[in-house]
Amino acid sequence: MSFFSKFFNKEKKEDLDKGLEKTKSNFLGKLGKAIAGKTTVDEEVLDELESILISSDVGLDTTVKIIERIEARVARDKYLNTSELNEILRDEIVQLLAENNTTDLEGYTLPSEHRPTIIMVVGVNGVGKTTTIGKLAHQYQSQGLKVVMGAGDTFRAAAVDQLKIWSERVGCDFYSKGMNTDPAAVAFETVNYAIQNKCDVAIIDTAGRLHTKFNLMKELSKIRNSISKRLDGAPHEVLLVLDATTGQNAIEQAVHFTKATEVSALALTKLDGTAKGGVAIGISDQFKVPIKYIGVGEGIHHLQIFNKRAFVDSIFEA
Image 1 (cartoon, helix red, strand yellow):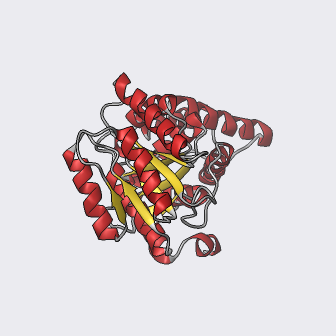
Image 2 (cartoon, rainbow, N blue to C red):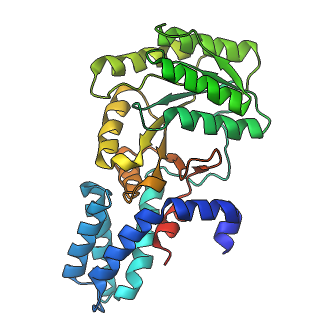
Image 3 (cartoon, rainbow, N blue to C red):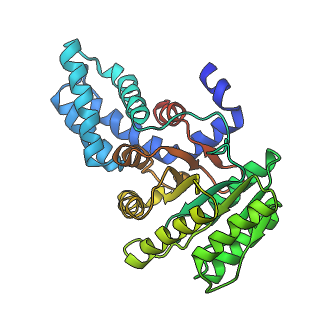
């Protein structure tokens, strides 16, 4: 397939297909039952489709948009065969993702031409934040870039230790002031370390206590301000990591984090462990923040660049 040969090698496509297997099986299975015995897309089929999208955690508002788009096509074409529904649904979702600022990247490009590029990573505990940082650092290291990880989650000893282990595994630099130190100071000094040691990129971890706690949100704003004081224009990217298995709760987390800081990109992890991969579509639509990475497995190479067409095609391929 020419599309995948341009953006994906065979191994990456297989990883993506495997990672989305549960979502695909859930969605196509329900869709097949909804249109069984029917030849045209009528009101009953659309009602079933709406239910399927919602149960796949696409979200109510985004589902309504998709259904309205298909209704418009039915009204325009007068007759829509159920055999065409898959392709039409696929196209409408790809268009929706494109409208929500999700662009198709061809590699692990840094979000800024500045050196060092500063990436601040946010998200609640347990979403795979530290693992995402490690895998992302690995990708940059493999390109010959010099990376430093900053251990800004100073409230959990495990967070600092895990990040150090990842730095050793990846072979990149590591900066920490230990436990119970000021996270904003760690962020400031990580940036300072990156400048002094001529690093290409600094990836700074942050605390991930419950998003409902006001103090955490306040702390994130403080960390961001501290980074910008040391390097004008930084952070160049604020990456919000969300766990796909939490479904609609991931959207609730995004609400709080986008209020606390200017999130510029999303990473959606653990897609291989859920049938609710549709949450990627809802999150992108609701927040107009591009999805940049998806986690489709536990291996170090299983953090993939998000490609909207490849993602949607993988779900809809029979």
